[in-house]
Length: 537
Image (cartoon, rainbow, N blue to C red):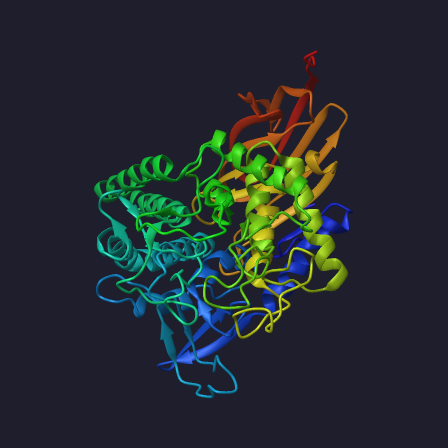
């Protein structure tokens, strides 16, 4: 099987909803590539779905797909680092394209930091980590370390970003992590500025993002043997986790916005508003398994009771029409209740990890059907399935090849269903969690490759009767196997290259898994012998 696999990322199952999902998403990503020149240096980036700009926010999430297909994933990150302010602040975006046609025609180089945004610095850290993961360039990452540290120190110290009393990241009252604030009618359009009248509060998505960023920076410092700095950032992460869960968890999910400045928005049931960063909190690791299950069940309940074509809400229920200053922001539009593949991908990944594997498969299948029928994918849709348009949004464009949401779906596919999670760089340390039995797939061939480095990992999967066989190929990997078994079965034995291996049977909710470890140098065969368990009456 492994003789002529090249450097492509692919899945082969004989089922188009799985085999074609990767090439379709790749085609969307490719349509968003742009090359620009700033100060005589070529920079390659990927545009945001609603304008020809390079936002670090979008790019950091897109990298979860781009890292497999793009050879230059470092130049844009380098540019954000080079333009970092002395206090650590990172720009939101850069563009060389006119944004507000026809009134703006200048093709100057423009940099923007939206003052109300509090999430930019963790996006920068995550983008750097993902680029290093795919390229394995230690020298490059070490050079950027001071920028990463300074960015996170900015968040912990700037009065616009850090609440000393709650010890959490704060922001103006926006819809989740979006970039315009509620003003109670005191501003004549969308408000992007911090003023004396800003309504302050805690948005959980900022804090889950910084929890992950603190932990990633701790991991990087530990990798470079800087133990004291690694311990510092690990401590910051744990303290943030405790404070966020104490402040933002409402017993079912994370409260959208915990107010510091008192404010009432008529017609808003804030206790019921489920916002898009909830599944992200699961994937960033700040939610416990119990909390993850509660959030997933909340989405399933809303799916059952909603008329929307998918439960991938930006926020639900939405805010009243126009209260954020633009008449286009009606309920069900854009980030005010629009349906976002970005959310669906995050939700699918969370479902795969927490015992709701069939739900994860269902989300991927739903998305595949959408894009197979139309050949298009949008950042958001109205609840009735109507796609976004420039006329219905506050943004200049509505690209039919959204790379942000599609890359989230690819993330769920490759790390959730295929189950290849790189825990360091260049697949040196991997969790391998094939979950094909949840999709009723008995045979699969898989390869995941980083184009910028050429490093890859591959496996074949076969389930026949009471055996699961895996054939794994890697140049050098420490692999933690976490293999989903058929319902009502457990592993009776595990053999790696014909030798008995230690293993543990585990349940994730009602889903049986077998866990074991192996070092893989080259081609290694694994055979899992199954035994039917006695079902509870």
